[in-house]
Length: 142
Image (cartoon, rainbow, N blue to C red; front, side):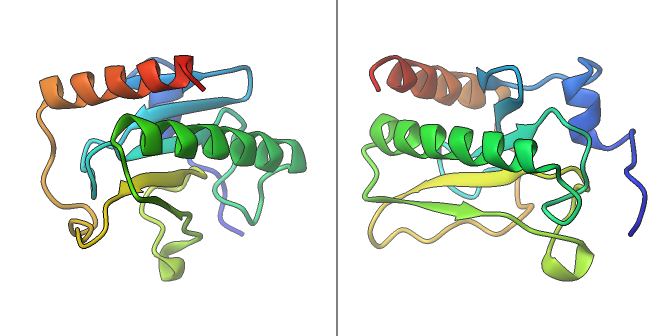
């Protein structure tokens, strides 16, 4: 297996070297807005443990990510009055992984509305900030 790259974008965000719109944080996970959202309210759940993906993640990181993913799925569904939620997780380049630090995509979905293309346009900072606030508000009410 390929070694973990400490200079990946999520490692830099976790170290505070790159900005992000934090939606939720606990001792083991961080949830942030995806800067190239496939749906309004698209968040990423990232373990604080250093792991490339589910193939090398320690069991405690998998558990923490699963629990945070559930929490964020409920929050984005509520915040955006969504009909459902799509959850995606990719492993290695052949599996569609682009950033090699494990992460889970959580996207609110509305009937009849397609997802935008993967790695499409970057969203405006002020829109990401507003959506993050909507999700944080929803988290308070769960």
